[in-house]
Amino acid sequence: MEASYATVKSMAEQIEADVILLRERQEAGGRVRDYLVRKRVGDNDFLEVRVAVVGNVDAGKSTLLGVLTHGELDNGRGFARQKLFRHKHEIESGRTSSVGNDILGFDSEGNVVNKPDSHGGSLEWTKICEKSTKVITFIDLAGHEKYLKTTVFGMTGHLPDFCMLMVGSNAGIVGMTKEHLGLALALNVPVFVVVTKIDMCPANILQETLKLLQRLLKSPGCRKIPVLVQSKDDVIVTASNFSSERMCPIFQISNVTGENLDLLKMFLNLLSPRTSYREEEPAEFQIDDTYSVPGVGTVVSGTTLRGLIKLNDTLLLGPDPLGNFLSIAVKSIHRKRMPVKEVRGGQTASFALKKIKRSSIRKGMVMVSPRLNPQASWEFEAEILVLHHPTTISPRYQAMVHCGSIRQTATILSMDKDCLRTGDKATVHFRFIKTPEYLHIDQRLVFREGRTKAVGTITKLLQTTNNSPMNSKPQQIKMQSTKKGPLSKREDGGPSGGSAVGVPPPGDEACSLGAAQSATSSSLQPMPKPSSGGRRRGGQRHKVKSQGACVTPASGC
Image 1 (cartoon, rainbow, N blue to C red):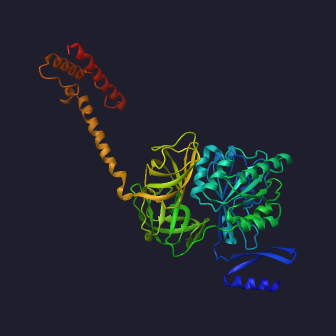
Image 2: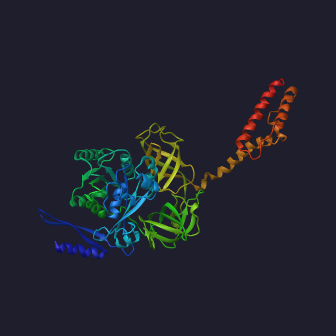
């Protein structure tokens, strides 16, 4: 045993990794030990795993994060969640309405390093990151149905490695629980379930909730293998097999008594990031938020999708409304509020940018290496699956497309079926209605409008910015102005005022006299004041038309 350990230890030293004993047990053939091999990270560097926290409203999402990150148990009346809320209305209602970010740090031994400030109770992210070899970033999402678009953006734009589905043991699987589970499955994010409030739930209700949960996870739509985690051995087995995406661990915890919280922390410590990167790849960074910081300037935050970005690198920022990309320099880089010199693929970061206004940057834009020669697309084809729609979807239907950090309305131009219903699959041709976007083939998308939901994958990029539809707008404006021209002249009582009523046929003098009288009477009408609104002038024009129509028959036409 010791000789085997020495061999593993020497191999780990060669690749600069630590070997940590997880458990030791007696088997029929002798003793067995499980070790965790974790690569050492340099100063101011750490492994990062992103976990999205979803579930129905009142399932205990923010409370659990408050207990995990601050190390204090809840009092059953919302004490723990108060530390996470960012807005006044969230504190008053007790419901999350925005995407929150919280971190939990582990050292090389697997111990939690979060130590809240003794006075304010706040967390100093820089201190946590300095002591940690691994940091779990929790993306706290909203559970209420009216904040669904925020939750969808959090799942697509923040690119979580794993998803933690929260279920209240007393309420069971209600409301948005199935919606959020379906969203995670559609985006191919591995899910583990946490059943909360077991201290206040009767045993029979808890068993009923667990039975329903297991039935849901085994159903044809999910095809998961549910595993109830009740010991450290279960944690090690499930964590080592979790990346296969078939296994779904279920934890039963209490935020008030702290029951089984140690098992959940151990599981989080054993999770490994799903994304890998290669330094030679061209860099790509997607923007999910923008800030204007006094004394610093414009700051963008988001996720590095691939490659390596260093301080003072020059990248291309875009696309703008015309589909162009602007060359921009990175002034400084912060990672978890800590200044760093570089970021790699799979890491979140914030960049301070030189000589650009915040108003010219929006969510959904990207910063890419000039080597990629990026092009924005107005139109694309995707293979979609309709999860739910009350009636049928046909061409010219519009809905919101979520694709990475992109969130924009798109129109269906055509599809390979006449109409789509719930459960149908089809190849659909989309067109963005506002601005072109930077897309990839094989990128996942979510299609949403009201109660309609569809998921899919981009298969083809069709129209790039060279054929930008922005050129058609000036012609449209000119056409409108030519239509309005005669009306405005007629209001002033100019020569074209009479011609607007109608030119009589030659020889019909009575009709021409009537038309002349109507034109004269209309020119004698009191004109509206220049300061009055356009609606009033429009009304005056309609009055002129109607008077002309009345006078003409009276004159014998």
